[in-house]
Image (cartoon, rainbow, N blue to C red; front, side, top):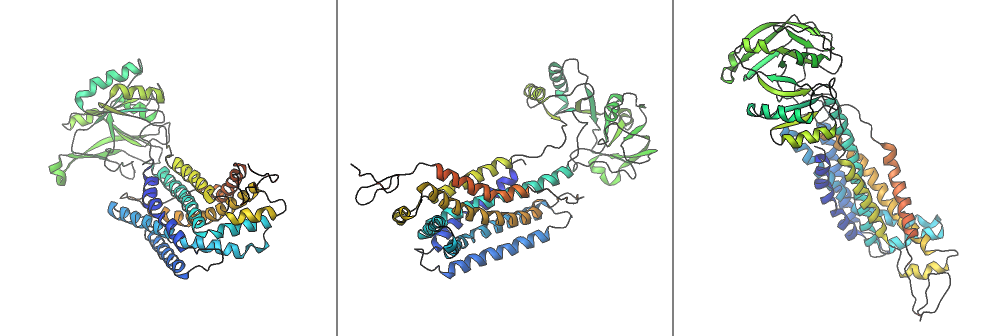
Length: 484
C-alpha cells in the first residue's frame, strides 16, 4: 500500500494526461499575431468542464461514511482518476489561449519582460507544449500530495495496535515449525523470555462480552487471546495481575463490567447450532491504555474439548525491546517458517514523497526547455538598453514556468480534493467516520513561486550560446568582435 495509491494516480492520470501536450501544440496559432481558433478552446473547455462535473458527482456519491463494497469502491476510483486525466487533457488549449492573453496584457511590462512574453508567443506551439508539460507535472505532484495526505489521515484512525508498544510478535506458520522457530529466536535473543499466545483450534470459537467492543481485524485475527499466566501479565503490563486458570479476564481501560463471558464454539458445518458456555470473568486495567483484549485461559479451551495450538511467540517489551536490526536478523534466520512484527505504532506511508519529488524535478526540467529565444530576439535584444541575454533567458523561462505551475497548482488542488473522497471511501462493514486532514497548503501555494524563481535562476546562470549575425560578428557579448 505504500506506493499503490501514487502508482494508480501516475498510471491512470499522468500518462493519459500527457495527451494535453499534443492538444496544446495543435491548438496553438502559427504566430504571435495570428488569432487562435475557437473550436479547440471550446472542445477543451467542454471536455474539462464535463469531467469536473463527473468528479464532483463521484465525490458526492462517496461522501457518506457508509460501507462501500470492493467492486463499488474500485469502480468509483477508476472513474474518478479517468475523469481527472481527461480533465487535464482538456486544459491543453487553455495554455495556448493564456499565452495569447499574456501578449495582449504585456504592454505595461518592462521592455525585457515584454520581449520575453512576445518571444514565447512567436513560437506558441512549442511554448504551449512545454508550458503544458510543466502544468501537468505540477498538477500531478499536488494531486498525489493531497490524496496521500487524506488517505494517511484515514489510515491513522483505522490503525489498531497488534501488541504493546515495542513488543515482537512471531507468528508461526505450522505446528511442525514451533520448535525450529523457538530455537531460532532464542539464538538471536539469548536469555530473553518468550510468551506463548495460543489459538483455539476450532472452526468457530467466539468469546463475547456484553457492551464491550473488541478490535475486529476483519476475521483475520479471532476475537480474544488464549494462553497461560505469562500472556495475561504481558497484556496488562503488570506481573502482579491475579491469574486464575478458570477465569477469563477483560483487559481494557474502558468503563465496563463483566461477571461472565459467553463463549460460542463449534465446527464449521454446525455454524447454525453452536454450543455455548459461560465462564467467570473479571475486568483489569492495563498499564498501556491502547491495549483492549479478552484473555481466556488455556484450561478453559481444553475443558471444551479443544487442543490449543501455538499462534504467536511474543517478546514482552518489559523484558526486551527488539530493534530493527535484531528483527532483520531474526527474519533472515527464520526464512519462510514464520513472520515477525514489531509494534511501533502507526507509521505513515512515505512512498508517495519520491513520486512527488520526481514530478517536481521533471516539471522544473520541462520548464527549462522553453529556451532562449529566436532570431527576432537576437536582433531586438541588443537595442534594449542594458538588455542582457542571461536576464532575458531568466525572464522567458520564469514567465513560462509561472504560467504552467500556476495553472497546474490550481487544477491539482481542485482535482486532489475531489479525489480524496473516493480514495478514502470506507470498505469495512463497520465504517470509521472520515477525519479532517492537514494538507500542506503553504508548501503547495509556494510551489509556483519557488519553481518559477528556481527555473529563472538556472536559466540566468546557464552558459550563453554564441549567436552570430550575417556578417559573422557576435551580437551577444560585451563588445562586437569580428570572427575569424
